[in-house]
Length: 81
Image (cartoon, rainbow, N blue to C red; front, side, top):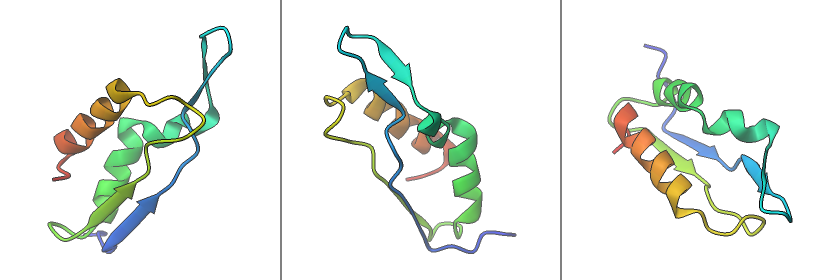
């Protein structure tokens, strides 16, 4: 119950910023990449029919395959196919 969306599109801001010295600054939008946020999205989608489109790459941050794999695994663990 409560699942009513066929499609959810998340095109969120970057979760962090790479500083010139190589440090990482966590940004407020990082909450949009947390487990609890993805769990909430999953609950809003129609069972076995819902689609999440998740934008996870940016030109502001060099490709970070480790984070992309982490988010992919997290989504699969939550039930996204």
